[in-house]
Amino acid sequence: MTSMIGVFDSGLGGLTVLTQLKIHYPKLSLLYVADQHYSPYGNKPAELIVQRCRSITQWLVDQGCSVIVVACNTATALAIELLREEFDLPIVGVEPGVKPAALSSQCKKIAVLATENTVSSQRYSELLSRFLPSVTVVSQRCVGLADAIEHSSEQLPRLIKKYCQPLVAEGVDHIVLGCTHYPLITDQILTALGKPVAIVDTGRAVANYAFHCYQQLGIQPRIAETAIYTTSAAEQCKAMLLNYELLQPLRNVPVYALAHSELTC
Image (cartoon, rainbow, N blue to C red):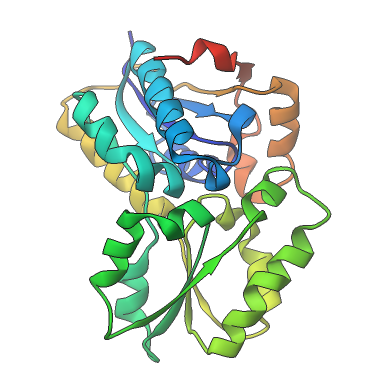
């Protein structure tokens, strides 16, 4: 069986990482799970998120994945340590790119756009503590934003404006995208800000590290294949891919339905 890199998220967000893998490492076989039946993770109970992460990781391992990417900031914050204890393979997480933003900021004031669960997590608090008090970090809880992106909601422009306007008043010069959904609306965020601000997205760095982990295993990929599975309707997921230009490299990738009830530990 061809060894693969497995990637998962609650929905479309993790596809921003999958896209980076597909563009920069085209010889890899990639398998993606969008847990859209439970999307978004950002406002779900921690116990549910941990259970879904365990189940999806086990399914990806059963399909032949040798590296797993938890392409969700919320899932990383709440579940990655447990996954690393339970599964004997490299598990790569994502977290807000506070470090590059803090190092590059001229005014030493940055902002992080993130979900409720990410901002409330101990992992996030520990991340910020490495840079405080030398850098001021404005943590913006973006309630409902990931869900609006997921479904291209008509409420999306209103929410972007709501969460970006306070950052202009704060005078930040870097904005960290603390959810993998948010790179899909980078242009809209910049428009809402109305002034030059550096956007920090860690998708490329995560893809690079996942490939490094894969290389360290000494596996030679044989067939470059990519497949997407969703715990919702496959045709609906496929249609969602068309809503965002950033996901253009994935538009010919097959999408299959995966019953959410099949993913149980």
